[in-house]
Image 1 (tube, rainbow, N blue to C red):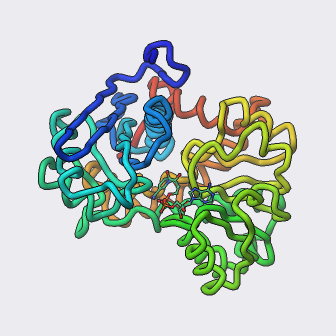
Image 2 (image 1 turned 90 degrees about the horizontal axis):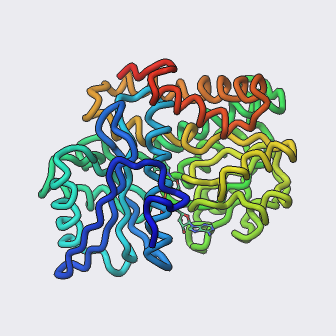
Length: 352
Ligand code: NAD
């Protein structure tokens, strides 16, 4: 497998492969950029179809973290890790502790936290081996409600911007298709329902769908139809690459705004959405709430300062929409440019 010429390799500072046969650990830690600070990023525990798929995922996700921290104004770099395992059947405390030792060997250049398949309890195991871990019980805690809140605020800003919805009434009667009803998606559904949205919900887990139907009177739809549902907003909150050459022509929504990382299958999908008149809210910009929360111990931000940073997400999003319009590019490209400018020291720098 080629690394330096890999399409997702972006001059990453360090990529570390770790194996521990005793505890069944196979992991990859990717540190993309530490210009602004240590690389903080979640650990995804996932049964990948291949090692190549895992490598691609961690390379893309870690780059996204550099950009996410830069746009959130945090003094943090970008990193991410993946463990190649089924989180429901293969994850053990021993595996987590072995991962903690792999993180410890990096001496603080990488700070681990939760992502898909990882829980607060896993971080507590990792913390037995390293102090370079965030999102612990009794610490910053579960980042998902913060992530959901950031997406919720961004979604309302996008509705004001694109559909001219009145402030405070943005979601009244608006149909939102939420796919992926896990930690973030379920919190987002609660906020959307509370603001008067009509929910169309989907997940590959039937119990998760039933829970949202029961709690919020949501309408259940098939996961394969989430993107093509008749709705004003499509909110992808499952895994990545949901916006691609096959799905984009079928999207009914005018706005795409969700929590999932790496929503665009390839960079050009951003322009594909714009060409169809669909407003795309860049994923790493709108889903930064969890990072802002788990970064509190590393950045020294108080809860109130972190909340204030979270509330800046919609302003940054509107700024990116303006930059995109001025530059004649799609919002994803405008967000990338703004993030790169901050990393290169040519844009407004981190404040934390
Ligand atoms: P989660 O594991 O709790 O939930 C993911 C949900 O998606 C699960 O219910 C799963 O069954 C469902 N799912 C998986 N494949 C699906 C498919 N093909 N169609 C429909 N549903 C599917 O994860 P989460 O923490 O809620 O994160 C969701 C997304 O948001 C991920 O992409 C994650 O990287 C991103 N994200 C999460 C956070 C956070 O704070 N947790 C922060 C930033 C970004």
